[in-house]
Image (cartoon, rainbow, N blue to C red):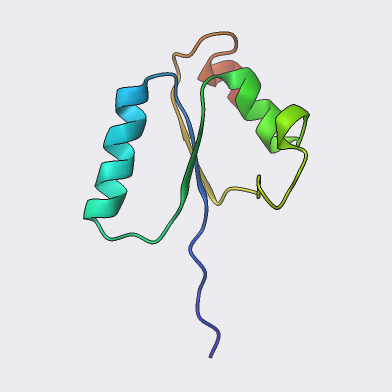
Length: 82
């Protein structure tokens, strides 16, 4: 039987405290998922399209879940979602 692999959670949020709280909640819940964060909508799009610093798919794998803050600088969550 194949063991299911934990999925990557990508969090787009400009608030460091929100990111830390999410990391703590994942650890407390004993989830094996890894969490990667980006700081704004433009960085989110770069990550998803493997542009700029995210061209290496081994260090920037496709996320299984995206946690999206709607109010971010540069490109907000609504724009990124479109």
